[in-house]
Structure formats: C-alpha cells, structure tokens
Image (tube, rainbow, N blue to C red):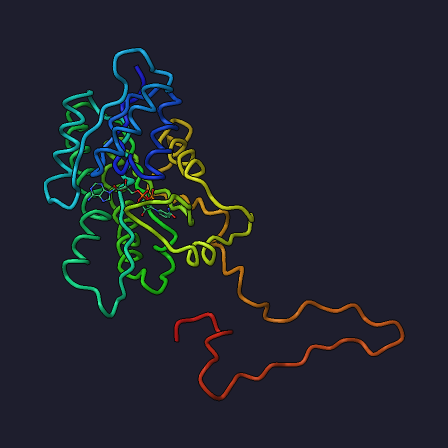
Length: 293
Ligand SMILES: NC(=O)c1ccc[n+]([C@@H]2O[C@H](COP(=O)([O-])OP(=O)(O)OC[C@H]3O[C@@H](n4cnc5c(N)ncnc54)[C@H](O)[C@@H]3O)[C@@H](O)[C@H]2O)c1
C-alpha cells in the first residue's frame, strides 16, 4: 500500500500533474476540487493508466468549495475517514484573479484569501491534529508563487496571499516539526496551464514567461519538485520555499544592461571608453527605470 496523498486543486493544471506524479509512485490518492466534472475526468484517467489500475480503487475524489470556512477541515476528515491516515497533503487549489490594489473590494479580498491562504492553513491544522493521534511523520506542500516576492499590476492581492502563505509555511514548519511533520512550499514561475478558472492573456503569458533557462515551465516540472520535497530524500528539509521557475526569480532578464557591452578596440584607433551617465534631474523615465514610480 502506497502513501495516502490528499491533493486540493487536483482538477487544475498543476494539481493534476501532482496527482499523476504520485500515482506513478503507487500512492493512494484523494483528489479534491470544486470542479466535479473535471475532477472525475482526471480520476478516470488515473484509474485507467496508473500503476494501481485494476486493484482496489487507489483514486478517490471529493468535491469541495474551499471558500466555505469549514471546508478545508471537513475535507481532511473525510479523506482520512475514507482512505485512511494521510501521509502527504498538497495544497494546490488557488485563484489568481486580476484585481487592482486601488479597487479591490472586501468580498474579492476575502474570497482570494479564503482559497489561497485560509484553506491551506486550516487543512494543515486539521492534518496535524489527526496525525498527532497516529504518531510522528507526515509532509505538507503548499503551492506558492513567484508573485510572493514580486508584485505586478493587477496581481497585488494575489501576491499578498502568496507572501502570507510562505510565512504560514515557515510558521507551521516551526511548530509541527516537533511532531515530525515537515511543511514546505514549492513556488512555481509562470506555467501555462490553459485554466478556465484562472485565465491569463497571451500578452501576459509572453511577457512573464521569460527565464534564464529559456524554455517554458510545465506542470510536470512543478509536480516532480512537489513529490521530491514530500518524499524521504528531503527528510531533513522543512520550512523551505523551493523556487521552481527556470531561474526567473534571480533577476529581470529583459531589463537593459547598465552599460553596453565593451566593443573591441579598433586597430590603430582610439580605445572605446565608457561615458558616465548623469542621473536625470527630472522624474525617472518609466520605460528604463523598471520600478513602479
Ligand atoms: N500556473 C502558474 O503560472 C502558477 C504560477 C505560480 C503559482 N501557481 C499556483 O499553482 C496552483 C495551481 O494553479 P494552476 O495554475 O494549476 O491553476 P488551475 O486554475 O488550473 O488550478 C486551480 C484549481 O483550483 C481549483 N479551485 C479554485 N477555487 C477553488 C475553491 N474555492 N475550492 C476548491 N477548488 C478550487 C480550481 O477548480 C482548479 O482546478 C495555485 O495555487 C496557483 O496560485 C500557478
């Protein structure tokens, strides 16, 4: 019998890839999402192709709306009651609506934080209380975002929820480590997932997809990192935020150089010298400054 893994957002691009990754390991899966139809499609494919195919059902589904305050705790109890003690909890459900900081409403903010922050925090709490009765061990992986470090226009509330999730990850790791539960986060760079629930414009995808490794990330890139950090090879890692982003969080690849590259010295000519650039006296040119003001 493999590990029992509960995955929220399992009908989505990243959650589904996480489910496939653990299924390949022979895990018993509980897949949870708000979108019942998409969830059943994912489960049917895993049942048909996974290594547990044909044996006693290794894939169970639970429909849940994580905007409800009691939903995350209920979900963990239902999964535990149906398929036995949970070994790994992956909090992948998330929403990333475009909301401006100057216009966001209380309802928008609460809904976003309910799914992206409250649900993973309360699911982790419920998991830890049940695990305390079972004995030491267990792993939680939250799916954060590069936005936790760097806001973008229209992404402020989302970025705020992920920044808070990273702190909640470290705080939970601190307290639950004494119980043998490791709590980490995987922070993806931009991953094209073609989501109906979280659509992004082509223009946005093209602008944000650049990274030093020069290829787009895939849901599988994220899923493999999740499986690794939840597994025995990472048994002394907790409170970590693992950035899986092709290097995009290392800096701003698309900004111009401070100095142009050196030109080779022309034969017999005067050496090329750099000319000092004086700071502009007037307000900065937003096209070259790379900051929001
Ligand atoms: N795709 C990216 O570029 C990217 C980058 C960084 C972080 N992330 C994070 O990865 C996670 C997965 O996102 P994705 O890109 O796969 O998007 P997705 O839209 O494909 O998946 C999100 C899933 O969450 C589910 N969900 C949303 N609200 C819910 C609710 N109230 N109750 C239950 N389920 C709900 C959706 O039904 C969907 O299946 C999210 O936490 C997201 O913030 C994504």
